[in-house]
Amino acid sequence: MNAATKLGAYVLGLAVVFGGALGVGNAVGEVAPAPAPAKSGHGTTHSAPAAGGHAETTATAQDNTPGGLQVSEDGYTLNPLTTVKPGEPTDFRFTVTGPDGRPVTDYQVEHDKKLHFIVVSRDLGTFQHVHPDMAADGVWSVKLTLEDPGAYRAFADFAPVGGSGLTLGADLLVAGDYQPRSLPQAARTATVDGYTVSLAGDLVPGQASKLTLSVSKDGRPVTDLQRYLGAYGHLVALRAGDLAYLHVHPEESVKAGPEITFYAEVPSGGDYRLFLDFQHDGKVRTADFTAQAGNGQPKPTAEPSASPSHGDHSH
Image (cartoon, rainbow, N blue to C red; front, side, top):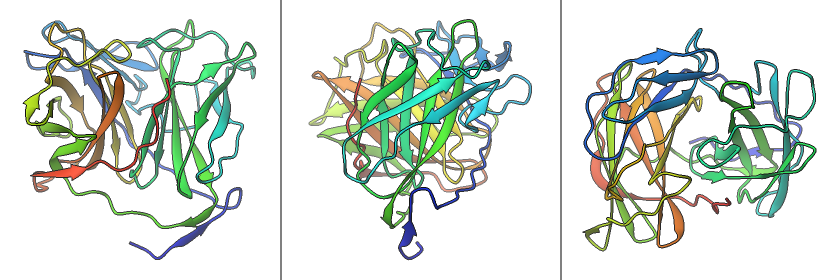
């Protein structure tokens, strides 16, 4: 990688170009091949369910461009209000303003929350999925700690009352000496807090790809996963290089593990980072993978990779 780069808040310009991404969530357990997505209005692309499942992701129906690509879309704008210093817990505040220029206060509840807030470092080494609280005036706040200086991307995933689902993205710049890290190598297993998560399935550009993640501890399958935000697991995928965003949820299942199955459709070949949130023994943990899609790239190895520091889950 390059030598250390000096990154100062307020002075560094960052060019951001996003690519497209579609995600199809599916039920845990036995599934049938996922059908092609059917466009439904603007903002959210829905796919017909496979074997009782349903799919949901944010994307414009007109051009298949995903949410998270821009800070403003359809008149809604993500407005960070707080500067973050490295290693300091911060009461991070932001608003989402609507077409009338005022902070939005009415949101639909999706996956048990009115808004999901995700923060990742631009080198995709750290990941946080948090859930802020909203005041009556529409100002959101959440405790956020970004340990290292550098460039981060924040995503607000929400659906305003009467509107379609959106994912808006904004850059957060943390001042200090910044040393970017290399993307972890592609692997089939990841370890976190004594748990091992195995990934089966491959990403294939342009078609629904079945991904099954299996959770074990001390060599034994975990069959008593706990519901987290209404599901046994939540998956976020980001494309390396531009952070194209994909967020997928599984559907209801009578099986609480060890397998959690998703369908994901990626827009291109290349490297992707996958972040799986799962809950067991009352704690949410995140297992992460690097996966490669298409274009004749080598398959991930079976070697385990230790999870980087993701920060706390605040819900």
